[in-house]
Image 1: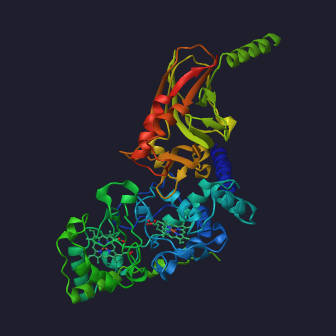
Image 2 (image 1 turned 45 degrees about the vertical axis):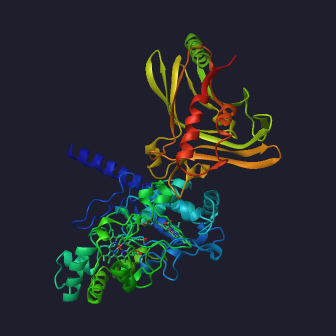
Image 3 (image 1 turned 120 degrees about the horizontal axis):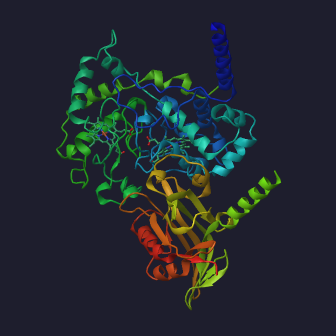
Length: 342
Length: 221
C-alpha cells in the first residue's frame, strides 16, 4: 500500500515537473525591502517570472523597437546613472529629435501609482507604448515592432518561454517590459544600511546634520524610505518660457494642478543629473541654492510647506548634499542583472 | 437512433431560427452609412467619413427570464462588417442596456488584449485611457474643406465620456437594430462645436451627451 502511495506520488510529481518544463515560466517573488511599505503594483495580476524579466531586459536594450533601429530604451535610460540620461536637459530621440522633458530615473517604480512628470500614464504596463510610438523618441508602430520580433531569430522562443506560446502581442511586449521596469529596486545605499543598523556602518557628523535638515525641510514631499510620497506638487520652479510646461494641468485641466509635477525620488541623486522635469540644474548645489533662494513665493500653486521661506546657510546646503550622497546605491547602479544581456 | 438525430436537428434549427440578432447600424438620413461616401447634412454642408469606431461595453438585456449580461466588450468598426453584429440571443428581448464607451475600471487596468489592444488605435498613450468614440472625415462647407476629427474619451470625472444607454423593445422582430443617427447628432453639434477634439475635457463630454438621444432601437421592416 505504502509503495502504491509512493509510486503515485512519484508519478504525480513527475507530471508536475514535466508540466513545469513545458511552458510554465519560473515565478520570482518580488522582495519588499525590510520596513518598506507594500508596493502599489499588484503582482498577482502580472506575476514576475525569470523568463518574463529576461525578455523584458532584452527588449529594453534592443534598438529594434525604434523605427530606424538606432534607439533603445537604454539610450535615454542608462543604468549607471539610475536609468536616466545625463548628457542633455531634455531627452534626445530618433534623428536627434529633442523631446520636451528630462527622462526620469527608473527606480522603485513598483511603488508608483502614476508615471511621467505629469502622471499622465496610469499604469506601468501601458507606459512602454509611449516611447515606442512617440515621434521624438522611437517613432515606431506596434504593428511594425510585432512584425520585426516575429521575423527575428530568437524572440519567438523567448516569448514562448515567458508566456507559454510563440505568439507575440502588444500585451506580451508590454508585460515583459514592465517586468523589467518593476524589478529595478534600489534599496542598498549607505542610508539603507544605516537604517538597517548594519555592523560597522554609520553616518558621518555632516551626514547626520544633513539628515536632520532634510527631515525638517524636504521630507514632506521626498518621504522616506522611497524619497517621494508619490504625489504631485509645485516646488516653486518658475515656468520655462520656451517649453511652457504646465505639468499635471495638461492631464486634468484643473487650474489647481497648474505647474504641479510628479515628486521624484532622490535615490541615487548623485548620479542622475541634470535635475528637474526640464533638466535645468546640472549640479545638486544649484538645486539646493534654488530651494533656499530661487523659489517663486508668489507662484500660485506653490505647496504650503514651501510657502514659508526655506532658510539654509551655505553650510546647511553642503550638509544636505552630503546626506543625499548616502542615497547612492552602487550595487544597483552596477548590478549585472540589470545590464545589457550578454 | 434516427429519431434522436432528427429531434436534435429540429431543436438545433429551432434555436437558430428563434434567435434574435442585434446589430449596430450607423445611419445618415435614414440609410446605413458607407465609408468615403458623401452625405449632405444641410444645403451647404457635406460630410465624408473615413473612420467610425467606438466601444460598446457591459451589454445586458432584460427578458422574460430576467436580467443577463450578454457581452463584456465590443468594438464597432465601420471598416469591419464582422463587427456590425453586437450579439445574438434566444431570449425575447424586452430591453437592451449598455455603456457607450469603456468603463473606468477598464481604463486603469493596464495593458489589455482583444478589442482593447492599443494596436486598434483606440488608446491614448500620453494620457492613459481609451478613446471611446472615434469619428474622422471631411466636412465641406461651401468651398471650404476641413478635417473633422472627434476622438472622444476620458474616464476621470468631471470629464468622463462613456454614457449609459437603455433601449426598450416591444417588437417581436428577429433582427433588432441599434441605430445611431449620425446626421441628427452632427446637426446638433455642427454649428457651434470645434471640428477637432482630441483630448478629454468638457467639449468631449458635451458631444457624448448629444449622442445619447440619437441612439434608438429600430427593427427590420
